[in-house]
Length: 307
Ligand SMILES: NC(=O)c1ccc[n+]([C@@H]2O[C@H](COP(=O)([O-])OP(=O)(O)OC[C@H]3O[C@@H](n4cnc5c(N)ncnc54)[C@H](O)[C@@H]3O)[C@@H](O)[C@H]2O)c1
Image 1 (spheres, rainbow, N blue to C red):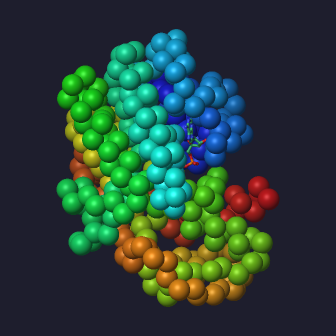
Image 2: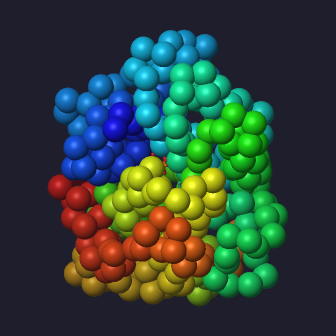
Image 3: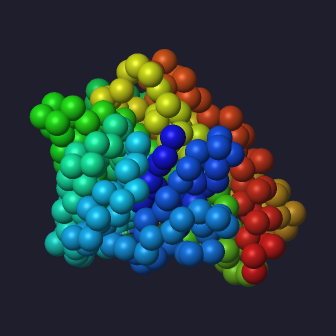
């Protein structure tokens, strides 16, 4: 199996590449290094420094003849999308269409697309199931939602197989402090530097934290699944963890007290969030394995080693 990982020098992408190498697959990474790091890409993996919007993309696909693509390259910041909807749209939609056109023209068999819990917006019922009404509250959520629709139509018109994975809040080693789900990354950095942590609101707000190794495995399983493709799956822990509980676990992991201050809640922030992961188990045989305390321990100690 020969796979392309767009955004493979990033956080989730580099873990996905590592998993693929463990499985003995041939992998190529394409990334413009806007947020990713060349050093994240394992030795020996072919690396193409290119923007997904580049017209040369088709030449790369024609030369390499990929069997499948995991499409992760994106503008990943929710606040940035609100301030710059044009750039968000350019990268997350025009860039994605450029990737899909190259797939269709060169006979790629399957695309796995990194979507997000941001497509749901403020949901009425928890845990959120895939069939829930989509009401994104940001342009980022809207471009992810529209990207999913492009895939569905590419599959209908051009018979390109796809699997959409809507990730919850991903955390783990190598995470930057921008983009989505960066709260663990921000908190571990502050903790490492012995700086106080600022919490927006009362800290009772919950999120669904999923370890990056589990997400990387989901990407691989979605590529391998024989049935139940051309569908959408949530990739989550299906567990609500409050920000206060997260801080308590981090304090135990770091074995030091955490100085914290509470600020007024941010406008538009969702209070409770968790995604059902039952469909992913039934559809692509995926379930999460990493317990949050162990995942946080690995994240914190990896940061300590790197700094
Ligand atoms: N981290 C999360 O919690 C989370 C949650 C839901 C969805 N996602 C999605 O997962 C994917 C990966 O996110 P991540 O957290 O690893 O972010 P990341 O920023 O670490 O990775 C994105 C990668 O894409 C590259 N990239 C960005 N724009 C590009 C372009 N125009 N051309 C080529 N490469 C480009 C970056 O250099 C980077 O290496 C994204 O699609 C993101 O929207 C992430």
